[in-house]
Amino acid sequence: MFSKVLIADDIDFNDLGAAQVLKDLGVKEVHYTKYCDDAILKLKRAALDEVPYDLLISDLSFKADHQINELNSGQELVEKSKELFPDLKIIVFSIEDRSHRIKMLFDDYGIDGYVLKGRNTSFDLKTAVQNAFIGRQNNVSAELYLQIQEKATIEIDTYDIILLKKLSLGVSQEQMEQLLKQEGISPHSKSSIEKHLGKLKVYFQANNSVHLIAIAKDLGII
Image (cartoon, rainbow, N blue to C red):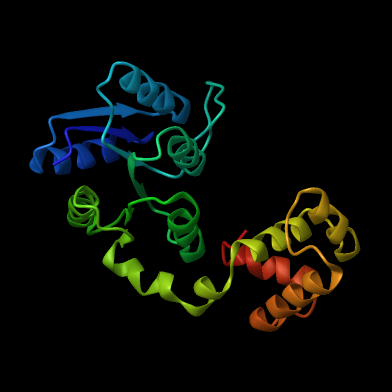
């Protein structure tokens, strides 16, 4: 079992529940932090001291307060942690249940597990930690498994999200081609952009680009 685990969550009650699960599993050291920046500092310090953390358990949402931080969300923490420590095991522990975002965390950042806070939290977290330890990937709470297999989640890729986000920021289809080209994003031809946006409009039954963005926001895709 893991020897050293860091929990990043700004709610004490959640820390206590997770800590009890880890204690029951025989984890020797469990440390806590309420800030993403502090979590990175702890990970760096432990690595320098040659006693690295084996596992990071992080929430996605961190409420803003008086402290100014560079990282302000669990997603940013996961991304930075994987960048600095590619072999670090990471489990996300959150109330967030939007399937696309969960799938993105697995596909883009390579997390090892996702646990939905709820009635089965303790059991699901225990299972996720055990599976992460033995190297079993794509662990999710049982109630989320079918949800993240939904057709919409599978068919929408990172490129589609980029287009949707740029549209939501006011970038027109006419401006998109040059902008994608400048950012080195392919495909960036006008025909490819139109084809992808047309596919998304048909898929979501959107009447126009404004309607498409509204639907994407409602579904938590952007």
